[in-house]
Length: 604
Image 1 (cartoon, rainbow, N blue to C red):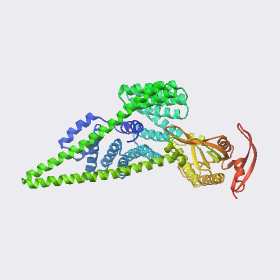
Image 2 (cartoon, helix red, strand yellow; image 1 turned 120 degrees about the vertical axis):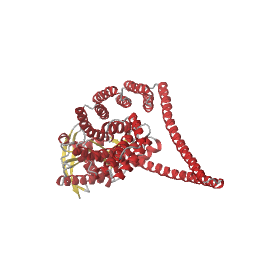
Image 3 (cartoon, rainbow, N blue to C red; image 1 turned 90 degrees about the vertical axis):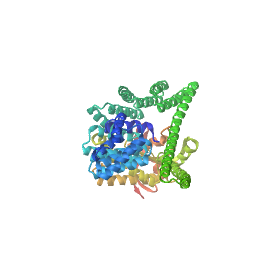
């Protein structure tokens, strides 16, 4: 199953169903089911009935999926592409809720393809939004961002209602928040918030405020974070939408813990637990107990820590037991249904043929086939399960290697932690775009984000070519290093070569900038020396480096000029035989006095 907190609260129950379509209603579904059983509707009316049945049936997802499949079959028979698109969209929604993400994604793509064929732009945009949501759940950030952009563009072009467009914008902002691109996330959240404000959509305003609050907390702007999250909680209490309130309270607890105010952190975690217990939210009770156990352990109150840890284990196991019981119930129901079908078949056969020997033969043959079929199904299940497990392992390893160097990732998997490591000689490079703040203020957010993504994607390719390690991006600043996690003798040469190639790429882009990519000027700074490297965080890992070498590299960038590569005397001594450089003299550097600097021109 995918992440309940992310997918259920933000993507499914709110953004997709509550905003794009009218609210689900189980009573309505029951009424429609009675009409369906009469079987006296004509073709077009039956299509609409099946669509409403699939959407409103919320207690039995498998029954809802059956309605969606019937809607698809009837739409194909009648050649009605609009309802065929809707059928695949409903099928994708139910597969998503059931946790079958691959099948959900396939259904959403089919829905988008059919809507495009029918020239139904609003339906196409809705399907793109669902595709992006699914990729987001799968942590495929590149594809999620791509399809959010397509969804927003298509929905705007279609003249869709503002709330639908705002939902897609809010989803896109949430994706940037996951990628820690906080400034981009805020741009999207603010735009969505303005639309929700104009349409007086209380639920949309509440979720927008909550998301913005979590972004501000991540940026360390705690006053803004506190105000936004508290406003969101107050609005959600009026709407009686309690599960996300528990999550926002835990976010506030994390924020105060990060500030060192453990008592306030405990207070917010206690409030989350109180809400969760009051309304019986077992997942949220589990999370709150776990958080309180950690906080009390931090303050040395081990008796309370142990108490909440026991409650955490009890609720966690309770949730797992419920899931296991449900799976066993499903298996038992399926078996009983199959057995009942065998009995019906045997009775029908007995009516056709009164010869006892023939009946006995058929029963024996049926049991043998059932046994063989069971053995084959078990073999097939085990084989598919092994494939899924192996695929998930590969996916997990791939995701870990996207954020940590391979050596560090292996250490983390082996011991559960990573020890800080000192490197005696590495080369650190910083890049920064000139006048980026001006562009950020005046450009549409889609073009701004697409421009940054275009440049940084190419930077990633270049540093990978030269064996450098990407450390992080902060806004429009890009940081990488050579000589770690595996020490090398030529790290300075490789870093300067990469810088020259980045500078050439920037120059070529300015000459041939597309309508969606802005030509920018760049400053590059490089310094060499010792650093300490390690992993920070316990839930969202980040590989980072520290030391005076890093600070000087940053000063080299800020004292560089657009289109130039500025290196320190440390780096110059390592590369002077391989690159032509101009001595700039001793230049005053903030908080460091004067330092020798050199511009790199080209390789010798």
